[in-house]
Image 1 (tube, one colour):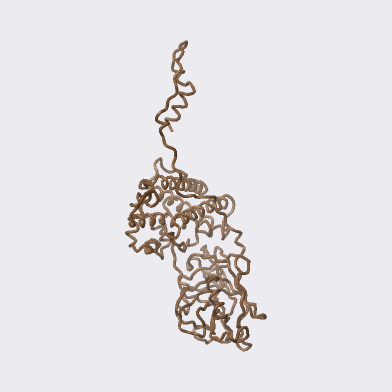
Image 2: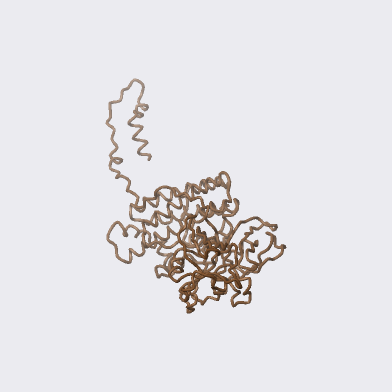
Length: 222
Length: 260
């Protein structure tokens, strides 16, 4: 179960690039900032900050928001489709409500700087219990690792407290779905943070783009 | 945490257990200066708030893009009869989308989705391999086109949010009845007869089948508002320009369209 690879979900988009483009950086810059520069998170709200630092900190918060979008969309879709029963259905409803609360909180904190919700393609993972279990384990493990990857770099006590609060809930989610999936809730005595490649691959692999607007002249019957 | 436990043990007189029988320990003040100096926990910067439950979803509909050219089939089975061939693009250059109705495991063990299709005969549905489709988007709007009273009504979450008089097809080229959906939105084109905005639908004229682009029925503005409401079009649904702009603000792509 732990060897689930996110690229199995297919990759036809580039969420990292989409997020980065909002800030006029390359994806590499975005990643570097998101994964290395979160210590500057403090500066945004806790002390006077340069414009550059402020911009960077917004990107970091948006990185967390993007992960929350991913999870919230996943649980929301599975609940709407109604493909689960019993304990899995209960778990998905509870966790989905948590993830949506996380999204709301990050969006409130970011205000108009919040990135827009991307479109996610879960490739059928929301349409059967087995597919759901495998993907939910992967997503929850990812979220736990991603928050942990940032925690040591956050200087703001207030934001560190928030990150730890979210991280703890994600860890409980991970243990819960792991138990339901029949795998060990805890594999190691020491939990490793996720590297940037794992995190971005996961969100990028689920992104999709549908062009629904055009400037082309209509050919409708009139 | 270990320090806290240690302090609690001292306070409870646990150290007395180390004394020899008959000895009395002198009362010791309980002191834990390191603990007392710990600051209070900082207040979190984010207010996470209560969990957010979903609504009942009664009015929600899902649409999904066609990711690769694929045959829609009569049953969820690769060997079943093909009912339509689906491209990835519309004649307007937008992503071809279908309305998802249900899903099921097929004869091949893969997931299949039954979808409403933008093909003739109108109302056709077919089964498509899930892997040929993209992610789901959800809308909770529905446009109801009343041909008898020549009026269009947009519902959102089951509540009416828009209503306007319309022009519809003539007796020779009638607007087809049935269940359809909005599949794209065009703006900033140079065709005044369509007004400032045009929605493409999955409905197709049953008389103008050789029309350029396939004879799809649009919902659009007009350069002849004086003709509305009325039976004046080749099948399209015409609105006054101010009405189509308002509809453009309210109606997302993927919205189901009922023509009755």
